[in-house]
Amino acid sequence: MINTVALLMTGDKSTVTYYTEATRHWEELSPLPDSDDELKSLLNGELHWFEQNCGNDRILGAEMMVITAIAQFYTTDGGFSDDAEKQAHRIYSILATTPFPLQVTGGIDKVARYYGLIEDPCHKPYKI
Figure (spheres, rainbow, N blue to C red):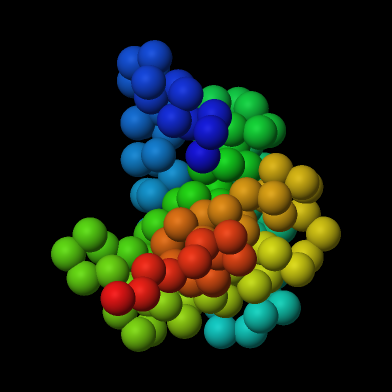
């Protein structure tokens, strides 16, 4: 998220376009395969698409892949629906446990914590 936030802060309009295209690409891939092995294969094959179409940059493409992989299931109005949260967890589990490049595996935990899919070990809940 660091790379894309930095680009957005400098007014890089292409970053918005890349996110829009990444979201459209996930829509084209839907519905996701039921089999985890098929989903793993799909995600592995799609990494190249994100690298090529999101700035033609490995790091930026991987970052946008993991962010949009989870964000596609979340709405600001209602968060995750039950089914959407299950799909987001599936993608998280596969990306976190499969030997993807460091840009993917390192970023997926951050995104999953941000969206509340996994607990942040450093976050201490406020108690009244």
